Length: 193
Ligand SMILES: [Zn+2]
Image (cartoon, rainbow, N blue to C red; front, side):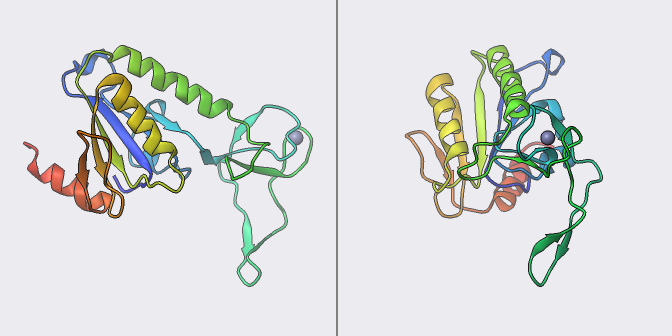
């Protein structure tokens, strides 16, 4: 697990045949969890994804896959060169379906559907023994950090907070002051093969 600002939660005792054993909640927008092999149905990208586009106006609610879309960058000016991706419906500029600061045009439907799947997962595992592994979720944009703490409070989960600078947490938090990969590798090495 190399992505930052993310957490994965899963109960210890759950029959694998009953469904997924873990779910990823992340503010990363780069699709790296799916690339690493996590089932896309078990990932909630709370701030959207650069692999999806939407109309910049927006003229409608459509969110479409970026697919092979590429944008050529002038590295001197760091500005994008034409042709730029466009909305298939109105021809206006297309933009990443990513929530930015002060962004009132972001379409959150895809993220909302992921959120609904996360809630269904949480209902299914209710009463189980839940562990949350939080990686690199700092306090400057604390979306993931708050989500994990709320889940601890509501579901009685154990929070393992991996953060090189801000590993502290509510009472009962297992704080690991290290980078995510270093900590995950160390935990992995201690687990039975
Ligand atoms: Zn449009």
